[in-house]
Length: 363
Image 1 (cartoon, rainbow, N blue to C red):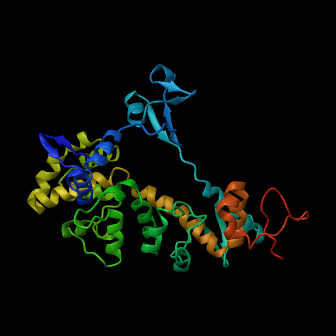
Image 2: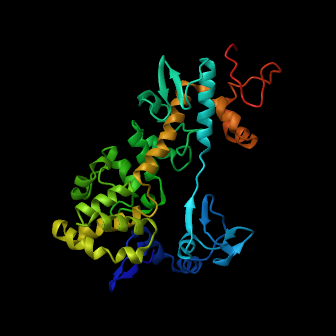
Image 3: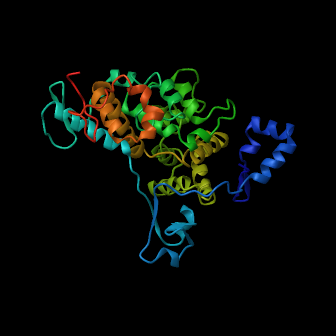
């Protein structure tokens, strides 16, 4: 926020560049004084949902531990203590997809290999589905309930604005609605990188840096994926593959000081090509967008799960909702799912009901 020092130079922060914030500070100094006092105060203690520290010696011997096996160190300190930090993610929608496919195969009286089912006479594999524009259209109005990742309040507006037509479009949505691209503001418009992507896609804005657009035209000159920062570092900044990868890692781990030490290497090649002002702007865009941005394999892999659910929901709504309701808890059913499924549900039937939702095709 306040910038930082690198090689004897001050790198400006948002309080020195973002006009609305500068105006707020000038007009409301008393409130800003309170905000400054609150900055950095721990708001609450929380437990990371998926991070595990792995060590070959007891963790309590090398780091502070509370409540059993929970460390008080954050990610960076865990690694500095000599342990490995891994994130193990679970995706409940994969179970929904599995149950749905089982119901489809049961209806077809088939028992194919895992992940396969027959659709309109053809064998389909759930992770290699044909791209169907009619499937994509079902979410263009923001109807994303039950779908992985894109069913959140922050995602829905971008789904409606971008109107994905391909896996690439969907992967871009997942990568854009992240703290990095959402935090980076264009000073002349006040729009975030994610918002600017939408404006350029809709033809309402033009790329401000033709040199950057030439490097990453697939996202209209907006840095979306980590691989794009790698490409920019190598082709514009003249970095070797190893140095570009090192810079990507430093950016993603939010190690500003260490990343700043590599800036002269980037600038020494970029400035003669495009000038200092543009080179600095591109560096700032890479630094901000890369803090939380996805790599391509992550984003594409996630959206394959999203598209599988979208495909099944469109072509097999009964089986899809039966799978969703089978795996949902009571709070989720009554709180968010009921408006979408109440017209499909029959009362319990002593001849049909099991511990899973059953599709009664006759009725």
